[in-house]
Amino acid sequence: MKPRLVCRIQMISKVLIVLLYAIQCSGSKISDLRLCADDDCKTMLSLAKTLARHHHNDPIFLTFSRGEVVQILSKSAGNRPDLWGGQIGDRKGYFPRSFVREYKVEIPNPGKIVPTEVSL
Image 1 (cartoon, helix red, strand yellow):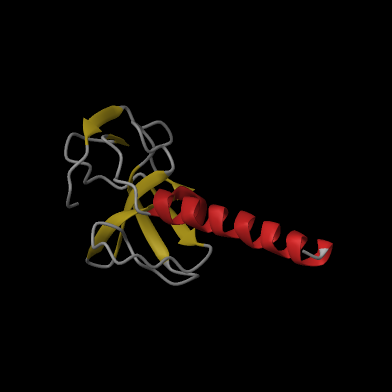
Image 2 (spheres, rainbow, N blue to C red):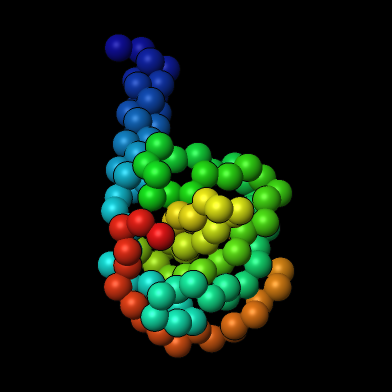
């Protein structure tokens, strides 16, 4: 084989491995615990603006466009610290915390660690 072809095959293999890992991670379950202001996780912790589009086929996850305002209802805890819970209008769900930037924090140190509901 030509060295160029070997390099290309190796590069494609690495890209496929990264894509498969990303798909596996995005399909992982939600966290077992969440950090909230109250036992029902109904009190808003903060307001945040979405930084990028987030689309997920699973209804447990919140889908949004860039620039939307999210009411943050729960934050990182448990086995999926990358996920927060929030609400946009009447839609609730989980999303990667890296997709939002808080701009108004109402409760800076929420103190309730509660089990996660499958549906918010």
